[in-house]
Image (cartoon, rainbow, N blue to C red; front, side):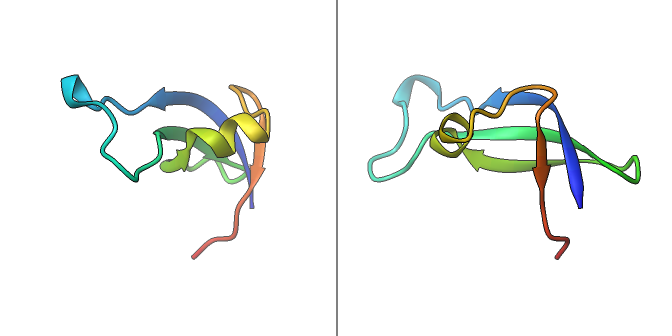
Length: 63
């Protein structure tokens, strides 16, 4: 299904920072073609590598 990115929120790791051996993650608010909204977590590197931003679209399989 095709989803539009509504907002990207960088996760807050507090004063401890990102734990060792973990990647910076973001919560992404999406709206599907059917109008249903949901949040998913994606790595910051995936978002950057794919030039995703508000208004971009993702194709996701429903599980």
